[in-house]
Length: 386
Ligand SMILES: O=C(O)c1ccccc1N[C@@H]1O[C@H](COP(=O)(O)O)[C@@H](O)[C@H]1O
Image 1 (tube, rainbow, N blue to C red):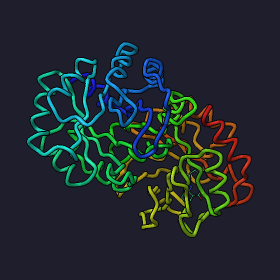
Image 2: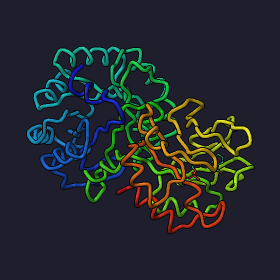
Image 3: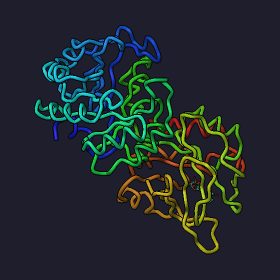
Image 4: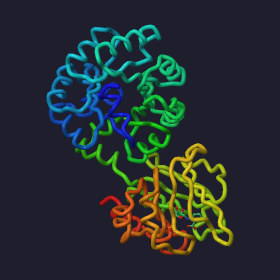
């Protein structure tokens, strides 16, 4: 394993942060981007790897890679349409730790040859697929790092749903990267929950007023879930406040029972909340609480993606309390969604004590059962981000 593979295999969601001045799909993104300034800023903001476009169609040159190399020690990925040994040798000499190999443009024999050449040069590779057939080829070629690009390079259309389905079926012994289409923290989290080791982000960073600050935002945790939503105007208020997840309690006995999962903006994740077993409400995620006799819900819940558990929701007893709740949650393994009467006043302290993957509030953000107080929702999200 080289430095590129190592950096991506670290626990948690990593990011490959990209430097590109323009793209064929979007036109100019950041025409004056200076790799000597942006590369170290990305590294300081938590990028595991920095990707540099060296192709003229993206406004890039090999000198951009050299400038990034001189400015940071972080692993660098050379991105372009590489098809010859000469391309890979140039990438290595310019300071790349890894190079992109696009299966769309290479047949199996060419790809296998370039994988061998890269290995002999001490260069790691990112083998990119866009559809199921290309992904199967990448897996069969034994590529250690596979990328699934949400963007169709022929039409430029973005298809996140298919991308995540493909990410989810990559064997666990490979490193998998969700490439393109990530603009929000929740979209990055969706890739993480599908099994991606890293996201590759270009346009969203290059368009941001401060690319490094945007990268920090995408990687920051905890996510914020506003739950118990029953009205579209409350979903919109949660989105406006910057919440990442919108929860709908599909439990008739609940004081905040919803009839359905309402429309949630593209940049957020919807969560259907159940007791006992999940139905099919078409949400991105399902939250399934344990059953407890005489109570509306049991204390714990599993957060599921496609039927597979991806996190634990740790809550207080129904209408009860537990002085050890946060201390026990802090000891829990894996991704923890902390719930249990969180509000704008206690969420900061709860985050400091538990370091959860997400925080979740429902009842304390209400003006009446099932009706959200928009000012409290805003204050909750603000307090969770501090
Ligand atoms: O709140 C309910 O009525 C409820 C009913 C059935 C299942 C889950 C329910 N609530 C979930 O509890 C957490 C936190 O809520 P709170 O902030 O303590 O009120 C949240 O995930 C709700 O979905």
